[in-house]
Each structure stands twice: as C-alpha cells, then as structure tokens.
Image 1 (cartoon, rainbow over the protein chains, first blue to last red):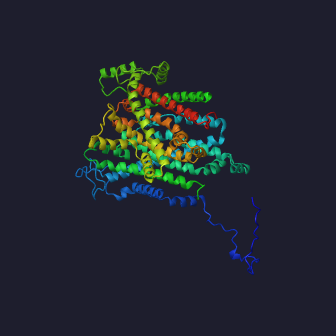
Image 2 (cartoon, each protein chain N blue to C red):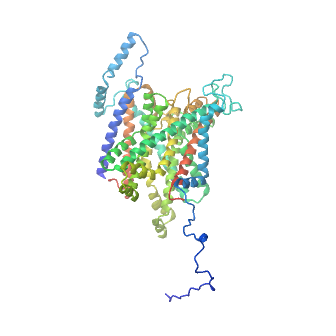
Image 3 (tube, chains in turn brown, blue):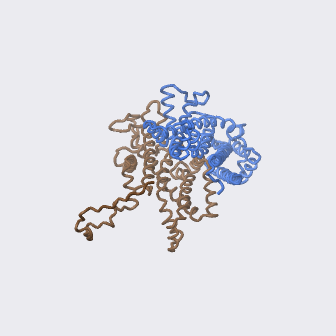
Length: 315
Length: 308
C-alpha cells in the first residue's frame, strides 16, 4: 500500500468572531429528540392508522356492531314479525334485503344474526383470553413439575377432535348461547395458553423481571404486571384471530341445524334456511353468506394489521 | 427419540382414556334414547324395557361403562343400536374408506397446489401472481367450506351441469367436494410456503449453490424447497388427520356416506355404541397423525430437538 497522504485539516478562514462563544439558550438542542416521544399505544395507533385495509376493516366491524345493536330502533320490522302479504320478496326500498318465505324482513334478521354471531365470537375470544392467559401464565412462570402437569393436560385437550365435543355438548345442554360458547371454549383456550406460556417463559429470564423481584414485587404482581403486560402484542393478535374462528364454528353449527334455535337466528341458521329455497330464490342466501365472509375477512385483516402495529420493533 | 415417542404414546393413551370416559358419560346425559318410547300401551312399554335389557341399558351407568371398557380391551366395539345386526366395526369399515379416499385426494391436491402456488409466488417477480396467491389465501381463511360447497354445487352442479353433486362414485364426483374441502388448506399451505421460501432464498447456502454453477431449478428444488418445506411438515400432520376424519358438512351436503355424516346421524339417533366407536376411531387417528408429523419434522430437520 502507498504511504498515506496526510491532508491538513483546513479550517474555514477567517473564523467567525463568535466561534468560541457559548450558544445562546434557544439554539442549544442537546436534549432535542428528533421524533416526538410517544407511549406504546400512541405508537401502535399511529402505525395502525397507516394500514388502510386494517382501518377499513375496523370501521366495518364497528359499523356491524352498531347496526346490530341499533336495529330495533332503525327498522319498523321485528325478527319474527311475519307478513303473509309479502313472501319471498326481492330487495326493494321497503325491505332492503327482501323477505323470506314467512315474509320476515331479511335485513332485520341478518342484523339480529349479527348480534348472535358477533357476541358468540367476542365472548368466546374473551373467555379464551381469561382462561388461556391465567393458565399459560402460571404454567410458564412457575415452571418445573407444575408446568409439566399443566402442559400434559393441554396436550390432551389439543388432540381431541373439537367438533365431536361441540356437537355432544350442544345436544346435552340444548341449543342456546351458553352451550355454543361452552362447546367452542372447551378446546380453543388451549392455543392461547400455549402462546402465553412461551412468551412468559422467555420474558421471565429477562433483566426487568429480575429487577422487579429484587425490588420485592410479589410473584403474582410480576406475572400479571410485568410478564403478561409485556406479551400483550401476540395476545391481542391471536385474540383477533380467535373471533373469526368462533364465528365460523357457530355458523357451522347453525348450518348443520344444531345451532341457536328458531325464531332467533345466527348467520349460519339463516344461510341454512336460505339453502332450502336456494333454487327458487337464490338471492336470499347472499346476505347471510356475505355477512359471514366479510366479517371473517375484516377480522383477519384487522388481526394482520394489529400484528404489524403491535410489534414494538417497528416504529 | 425413542424415549420421546414412548412418552407421547403414553400421553396419547391417557388422552384416549379421557376421551372415552368423557364421551361415554356425556352422551348418556343427552336427553332421549335410541329406542322410541312414545307409545303408552303396556305391550310397547314391555318391548322398550326388553330392548333396554338386551343392550344392557337398564344397568347402572358405572357398570355399563365397565362392561364397555372390558369389551373395548378385547377389541369389541359392540353392535349398533339402530342399524340392526351391524357391528360398529363393520360400519366404520364401510364408511372410513370413503372418507379416506376423499381425504387423501384432497390432501394430495392441496399439497400440490399449495406448494406449487407458494413457490411460484416466492420465486416470480410477477405482481399478478403474487396478488393472486394473496387473494386466494385471504379467501381461504374467510370463506367457510360449507358455504363454498353450496356455491360450487349451485354453480357447477345445478346451473352448468358440469359435475355431479351427489355421492362419490366416479372420478368426476370427486371434483366439487375436493375443491370445497381443499380451499382452506391450499390457502394456508401456499402462504406458509411463500414465507418460508422467501426466507430460504436469502440464506448463504443458496448463494453458494448458485456460485458452484448448479442449474437454477436444481438449486431451487434441492436446496430451496427441501429447506422451505419444513413448516409444511408440521402443518401436514394435523391437516391429514382433519381430512381423514372427514368434513362433516361437506359430506352431508354432497350425500357422501363417510364417517362425518355417519357421526352426525349417530348422534341424532342416540346410537350410543356407534358414537363411542366413531369417537375412538377419530381420536386415535388424530393422535397418531400428530405424533407422526412431530417425529417426521424432527427427522427431516436436525435442528429440532424432541427431548426437552
């Protein structure tokens, strides 16, 4: 290699007269942070807002919920009010989704269906959240023998074909909301428990957990205030994906004919009723099917969007 | 490895015991009985009691359970209560092959299409292909298979008369049910393959293989695909178990005499022995398939450690 040629550092000359003066106070910015400081959830929201698809999905789901709640106020019809003058009508201004074979307004029925389907979905996700987080959290944090026994129980439940159970439970407890929820939740909290356990197990070994222990925090406090709060991201994502799977199972039950019983109806039941008259009035099956598919789609997009937004490594 | 397999088998045995016990007592709690008892006449009552006595349904529940378990350990699943003169083993023997043929067809179909699409999307720079795979995988997770089945029946069966919609006799009969069952797995597989293929393509050994002058397709198949398929192996186990135990609705909709529709009808008929037999059969299949897929995953990927 050649000898390095040294170029002397050339100062701009002449130096400004005030080059060695202290900066005036308003120009000092050593503490300045280029990005505004945001809390975790402000950050998540900012990320989430950029994802148009997820945002639209969120709006859709909120709209669906609002319509489902407000439908008795908005519509002059009831879900079981029959009108023999208007059987199997096509969509019109009077009945925007048309009417079914008893002359019941399909829009109102679909919205009442949304009440059942959405509440089953959210309730199942909620129950799974509580059971799964507590169970998985304890198993992961305590570890050792406790973890072994608890996880064997999970393995057992995991390998049971869940549909068998749902069908049996539906028959034992009758066709109501309680038994649908029970059937869906018997096996589906297991996934959440596994997820939380892995999260807690890796977080347990980190310094902040040790620091909390050193400061004398109780084990319960460390588990719930530190470990679980720190794994909130994956938990929320799997939660959003649990809702559509519960809705799917519920509509499946309704479709087979053992779901929530008439005259109340979920989307699955509505699809099943419309299937009976499929050849003569194919338009009737469109509404419940569209509701199921769009809701599942929206929830999936929402889950994906949240997954990206909740990732603390992204900013 | 052997230790792991033995432990898993023991857990599986425990699971089966739990499954058998829970199902046995749960189905007895279901209101109703396999024999109709709406006739108030003395003769009918007498016959009802005789039927109950014949199948041992008049004994106390724990005793019945003991008798059932004893039979089970001798490999005897009992006779169907409703279908006279048929043993449960016969019914399973008749319906399982039907479901399995459909299940295997769907499995192979979804594997081929899923892996093909996923790989193609990962390798090609074509925007349209990538969009198509994304669309397909989104549709796959959001359209329930029973709705897809109805749609397929309506369009291709009833309106266009392209494919038959009832039963499973000729190869043509397989088309619609297979598609209906496979959409969801295809979506999952193509998504998984695409992600893991993209990951693998970035690895150093791919560059090395390429720099050695190996042909592009050889690099992709031998070095890329072989490594990218690992997550698929883990997914395949539960999938094949799912497909082999049948899709209840798709079987019912297409009037396919498989295990799924047999199960639904046995539950509505309160055919206790048949419910038990089918539950045991399906549970066993699921457990074994899960075990096989876990062991297979460890065998193809030395990085996975089973004993832990």
